[in-house]
Image 1 (tube, rainbow, N blue to C red):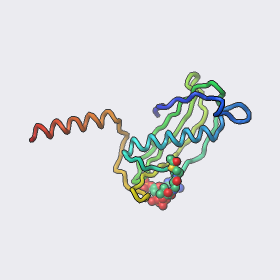
Image 2 (tube, helix red, strand yellow; image 1 turned 90 degrees about the vertical axis):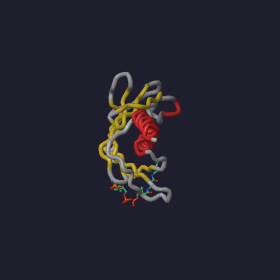
Image 3 (cartoon, helix red, strand yellow; image 1 turned 135 degrees about the vertical axis):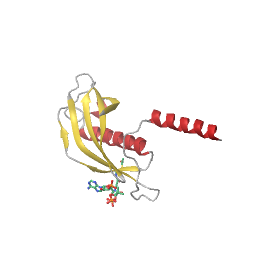
Image 4 (cartoon, rainbow, N blue to C red; image 1 turned 180 degrees about the horizontal axis):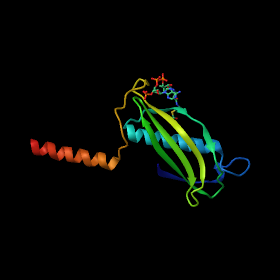
Amino acid sequence: MRFHTRKWVKPEDLNANGTLFGGKLLAWIDEEAALYSIIQLENNFVVTKYISEINFVSSAKQGDVIEIGIGVVKFGNSSITLCCEVRNKMTRQTIITIDKIIMVNLDKDGKPAAHGKKQIEFVHERLERSKNDKVKGEKEN
Ligand SMILES: CC(=O)SCCNC(=O)CCNC(=O)[C@H](O)C(C)(C)COP(=O)(O)OP(=O)(O)OC[C@H]1O[C@@H](n2cnc3c(N)ncnc32)[C@H](O)[C@@H]1OP(=O)(O)O
C-alpha cells in the first residue's frame, strides 16, 4: 500500500464532538480512490461502484496530520478493486480501513469498458517507455 496524500485536520473537518467527521474522511477517500484509478487506468472517466464494510478504528482531532493509503487488490475487466487505510502520519495509528473499493472504467457513453490493465504502473516508467519507443522508432526510420 502506498500513502500518497496527506491531510491536515482543520476546524471545518470536525463533527459536533470535535473529532474528524466520518463523512468528510469518506469524501477524501473516494477522491483518492478515483484519482488512483484514473492514473492507473489512464482514463478520466472512472466511477465508484461499490465500497465494502468500513471500519472506523480510531478518531483524529483538529491539528492531526493524516495520510491516505491505497492498494490494488485486483485488476478486473472493466473494474479495479482497491483497498484503503488512513492513519495518523506521526503515530501510524490506524484511523480507518476499507477492504474493497470497486471502481469502474467507463467509455464515452458512460458504459463499463475494458481497461486492459493487469498490474500497477508508475507514470515515470510509462514516460521512460514511451521515450525509449520514440528513440527506437527514430533509429528504425
Ligand atoms: C468518484 C465518484 O464520485 S463516482 C460517483 C458515484 N458513482 C456513480 O455514480 C456510479 C453509478 N453507477 C453506474 O453508473 C453503474 O452502476 C456502472 C456503470 C458503474 C456499472 O454498471 P453495471 O451495469 O453494474 O456494470 P457491470 O455489471 O458491467 O459491472 C461492471 C464492473 O463492476 C463490477 N461490479 C458491478 N457491481 C458490483 C458489485 N456490487 N460489487 C462488486 N463489483 C461489482 C462487475 O464485476 C464489473 O467488473 P469487471 O468488468 O471487472 O468484471
